[in-house]
Length: 429
Picture 1 (cartoon, rainbow, N blue to C red):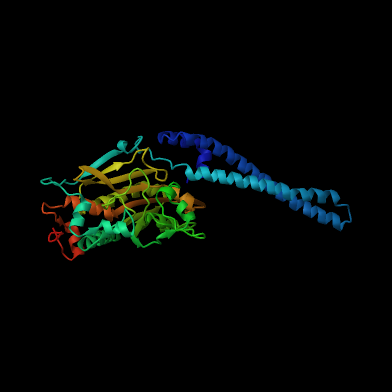
Picture 2 (cartoon, rainbow, N blue to C red):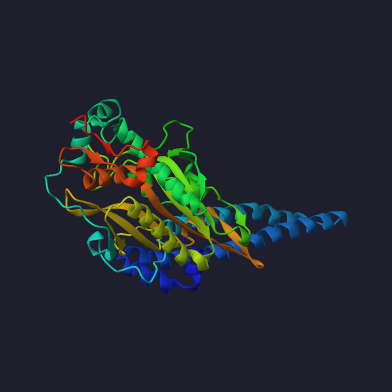
């Protein structure tokens, strides 16, 4: 959420940013927001004046009563004030609701380096890394292959849980665990602290970390008349909420965390889900990076987060590219976002495996996370990045390390986490 002070002082900056996003309807919101904010402040002052007047009249009535004087006119005046105050309170509440509606839906201010574009086709490639494998045989679809090898079961998972779920079995389940330990070990050596967060969040903290549209398209609601819980879509969300309503000392920052958790997503939208695959599913495991820092440091840490992710994929020897996400594809929370797209040789295309965002103060304003800056209290900046989403990484490994006989080589860096296993699936073909 944008700080209302920023909108009051710099409305044209907000409008120009909305033009970049091609979100012209919300430009009108800015003017209406400022009008309602002005009216809100006027009514607050009126409310304060009326309450002061009520207190003053009460004192005058008491004084006149002690003096034995007529209090009828003052009593009549006093009786009218509660209704006036009530009317003003109602107007204030209505204005607050509308102001909050706008603030919760206006997007973050984009970094100047974000490319202007209408959709993901206009994301800007920054660099490519890694050597693509030579295609000497036709690759099997990854879901078909691992089912044939007895390493996964999509059919039974669909029967017991629905489409978009899977069983991982044997060595592939071991590889999934190896990916998690590999990422955790790498990041802990880089001074990130491991967090295993709650797998459910209440709506208020959840509204602090995500686009409200995600409640319809992404989050699973826990049903029940008195339930106020949602399954988490990523550990980024509960880690961000971990410091909700906190005031930090500058000496505490930066705070660097690794989140490890299952993630649950409806995946409602144009992409759909993989019915027999690991790439886009309703449940998966992910290692996440998260940083709380001072505003002047967030650009530096954004580069650090994507570098960490790149080093993990380099160690896995998976080809990838880094793209700077354009204005039409970035969403409302991030000010700047990188994606790491890993090479999928069967499709001969790069596919998103890592999302790395600098959210500046947007989440912190919603969550009320600040730090002491001399005599002032300022909002911190938050950043997040995938380290490894294991399902997507597994698909990339299965395709890039697939052998002609249908077996799958284990990346050398994962072998110590898999009891020295170098190839999986060879005997089952």
